Image (cartoon, rainbow, N blue to C red):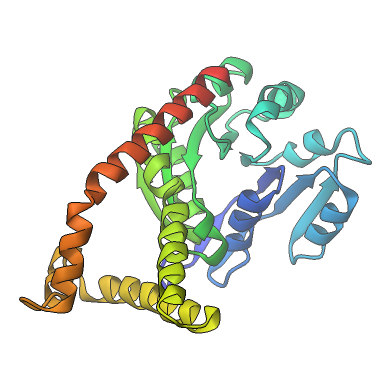
Length: 282
C-alpha cells in the first residue's frame, strides 16, 4: 500500500481479536484505509472495552453477550476468524446460519484447512485461508493467502487488499501454506534467536548488555534496510562487506563450515512436520 493509495473495504467482523487479528485490525485504522464498518468480538469485557475505544470499532464481549459473534457477523461482507484453532469448528457452527450469501470468511487460524471451514459453513459462503506473521503489529507482515474452492477472484482480491494494510502479501496454493509458515511464520523467531545469540557473543567479548543490544539490533535493522534500499541480492551485499583475506571473510568461512543451510533445512522440516500434525488434528 503506497502513501497515495486509498484502500476502500466493506464491513469487516473480527471474531477473536487477539494479537494477530488485533494487528490486522490496527492496519485498518491507518491513514489511507476507509472501512465501511469494523466489528470485533473478544471473550473478556475488559478487552472488548479496549477495542470499543478505537475509532470506528464496534466491540462485543462473548463473556457477557451470548449472541456476540452472531451479532458481529450479521451483514458483514468479511469475517476474520482469529480464535484458537481448536475453537474454530464450534465457532463456525455457531455463526453458520447468521452469515449472509456472499460473505467471505478469512481464516488466520494456524493449521485449520479450507476443507474444515467449507465442510461446516453453508455453500453461499466463501473461504480464504491466510498465514500472517507477527510483524503485522508494525505494518511489516508477510502474509500468505490461499483461495478456497468456493472463493472467487474478487474474494481473493479483497483478502489481498485487507492484508496489504499490514505489509506484503504472497498468494499461494493452500498446499504451500504450511511450508510458508516455516519461513515467514516462524521466521521472525529465527531472526530473534540469531539476535539473541549474537548479543550473547558481544557480551562475552566484554560489552555491557546495553551496548551489545544496541550494536546487534542496530546492525540487523541497518542490514535489513540496506537490503530493501539497494534492490540487489543479499549475496552481493555480503560480497561487498567481505573483503578478500579480511576479518569478515574469515568469519564467514567458519559459518559456512557450520553448514547453516543444512541447519535451516532441518529446522524448517521439523516445523513443517509439526504443522502437518496440527492440520491433521484440526
